[in-house]
Amino acid sequence: MCPHHKKNNLKQTQKSQDIFLRELTLGLPKRFEDVRILNWQDELHPSRAGKVSSVKLLSIIESKLEELILNPSNKVRGVFLYGEPGVGKTFALAALHNEIIKNNVARSAFINYPRFLGQSKRLFTDPVRRHRLINILTKVPVLFLDDIGSEQATDNPDYSWAQDELYQLIDYRHDEFLFTSFSTNVHPQELENRFKKTLISRMLGMTQAYSCQGDDIRPHLIINVNKKRK
Ligand SMILES: Nc1ncnc2c1ncn2[C@@H]1O[C@H](COP(=O)(O)OP(=O)(O)OP(=O)(O)O)[C@@H](O)[C@H]1O
Ligand SMILES: [Mg+2]
Image (cartoon, rainbow, N blue to C red; front, top):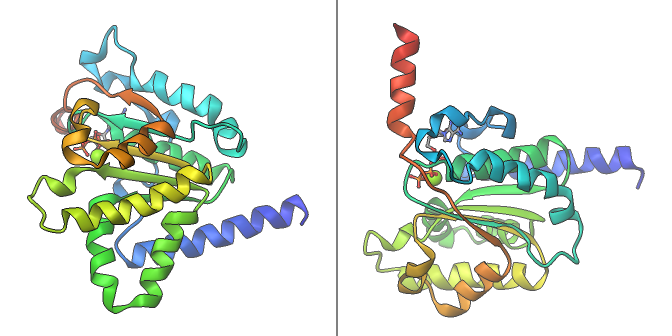
């Protein structure tokens, strides 16, 4: 296939995947649709002075993006971002997802993991759509799984079912060297309280882990909006 057709094909499959995920209320939230690496505002991270700021993290990842995604011999196939609420983890993953799509690097899916679990369960009565959804998550060349681990926080009785679901797709992606990135509020030292060892081993084995530090940005955003209004 010529490069032009390849690019058009990629755009089409990405579009139909985005529509399918959006219908299921999955996929990239509106809030993060226009987020790009260049939109990153470092001044929103006042407490980061002296620490590796996330803007640096993003530019490191960006410079390696093609190499990470397109070179299957590269064994580290994504990032594992962990940190407190509101430090910009989702923002960082969304920025990477958008860069990949806008630059036609590969087909990419951005999934809020707790929402995926809800949908996956609901779709037990709709096996065709359920199969398509699981198929996307298992085989899409680039996958961002946002907010893993929080499903247990609410004392979810489906905990072990959720773990099996996650394990199956991560195991496949791990073995096939598919680019997969995660974000979580769970500190690596506490992972063992949340996830089975086999799952942790694969998730950390296929990614580079980064600690996202700083204050909760959300209150700063409100202050910024108020400042603009005055
Ligand atoms: N560098 C940034 N520049 C501009 N806006 C940002 C930046 N980082 C985060 N934000 C905004 O701050 C808010 C909080 O960031 P985000 O949702 O990424 O946090 P999080 O670490 O994923 O939090 P949680 O663990 O609660 O999901 C979002 O509205 C996001 O758009
Ligand atoms: Mg988040």
